[in-house]
Length: 341
Ligand SMILES: Nc1ncnc2c1ncn2[C@@H]1O[C@H](COP(=O)(O)OP(=O)(O)OP(=O)(O)O)[C@@H](O)[C@H]1O
Ligand code: SF4
Ligand SMILES: [Mg+2]
Image (tube, rainbow, N blue to C red; front, side, top):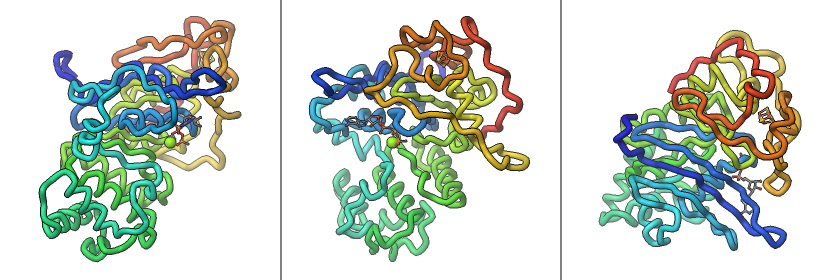
């Protein structure tokens, strides 16, 4: 991106803390990234790494008692952190929309999905019920929902997982948002439907001019979809950069371990894929130094007293790991996975 152009979303040092044991614990710590116009950026990490908390904080949707959101998140130059709830509500659905991790969170079980999408449209635009329904049916059709007029009359629980997901994307897109935050939009789906939903998300850049922040724990999904990727570990940034660079030359051992756990895109599938031993620490149990230390094969004395700072290590690539200056350099990756954003 040219230096003089403002990113669509510019997040800097985002911190989210909640009260615990008489103090505050940080669920998310100093997360920074940008999303450009019509760009898909991936936010990856294992369960509990802070992906949803980051997204919900951006949308002003964390309603935990005593929660503190600090740092900055500028959407088209407008600061979202600390924005009045009413102004933020107006932005949501109109400019920024979210696909929730659980489709049932987005839909109320007691109304048809068509009614709910109609209402979302009518909350932001003065349209008759009939005109709103026509838009709803058109959106469902664009999302590849068969027989959209009839499907609109069905209740959420009457739809398959794939159809519900498509309906949720239709609802998120109903007001032509500039930015779509998609939290694990394909996790519960089978491989074929997953591929269709990812194709749909890729197409949004052209069909709706939308940018997407795609949250997933699956590096395979990132490889197929995202131009740039941000890797989170225990609420902190481990690494970020162009997806192709991250896949070819991961700098952080955690990124490398995540990559080792995805099946190869070409050739025979190995009988077992290596998983990362152990679990990430919860925010309460995070060690003083690098949070990945207890699981890292390269851990050494320098990593332990304090978390290593994020450093620039190449064009657009940053990593929070003191390798290779202090430790054993990461072995080069045998094969670079193809990426297809
Ligand atoms: N309101 C809250 N109060 C206290 N802790 C919370 C709260 N919300 C989330 N957490 C904790 O913050 C951490 C990050 O949670 P988050 O939901 O963002 O993870 P995630 O990366 O989205 O994981 P998953 O892949 O399972 O969806 C977890 O340890 C979670 O238990
Ligand atoms: S800082 Fe140390 S413990 Fe953390 S990932 Fe790098 S080598 Fe491993
Ligand atoms: Mg989540």
